[in-house]
Length: 169
Picture 1 (tube, rainbow, N blue to C red):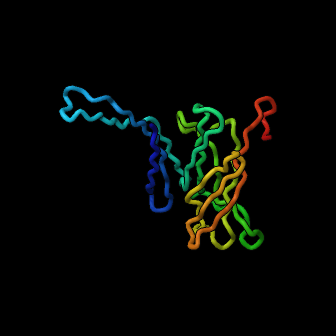
Picture 2: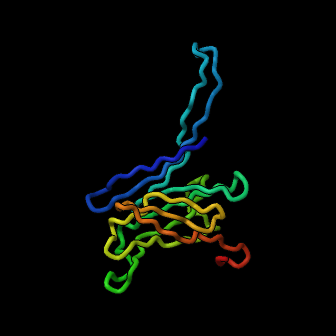
Picture 3: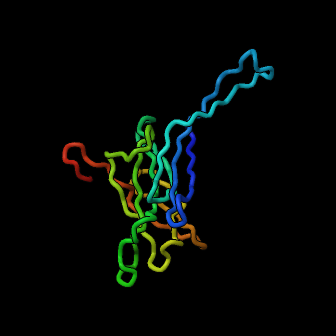
C-alpha cells in the first residue's frame, strides 16, 4: 500500500512552498515476540519532491490499463511569477498547471503534456482548485474550487505525447 503526504510551509514571508512525499506502508506477519499476535505495520518514506516556486493544490490518480500504469495528476499554482493575462482584457487567467508525475520518483512524466489551470477574472488567489477527479475515460479533469459556493471547472486531461512524433495527440 502506498500513501501520499503533502506538506506546506513558507521559506520566507513572501513565497509559500510545498512538498509531496510518497510513503510505503507494509504489513509484517505476527512474530513470536508479539504477544498479541497482531501484524506490525511499517511506514517507510520512499521519495519526496519539493516545489519551491509553487504550491500543490490537488493530487489525484488514475489507472488506465494495468497497475504499472498508475498516473498521478497534480495541480500546481505558481507563487513566484505574476498570473498570465491582463485582468481587464481576459475573462480567465492562468494561475498554474496540471501535470502528470511518475509515481516511482515524483518527477514530471515526459510522456504526458501539461494543461493550464485557469481562474475566473476577479477571483484570482481565492479561486484555487483544491480537489480534482479524472473522468472514467481519462479525457477530462474536473476541479472543485475553494470558494463558497464551490466553483466547478472542467479541463481536458493532459494529453499523452506520441512516441514517434513527440507531439500531442
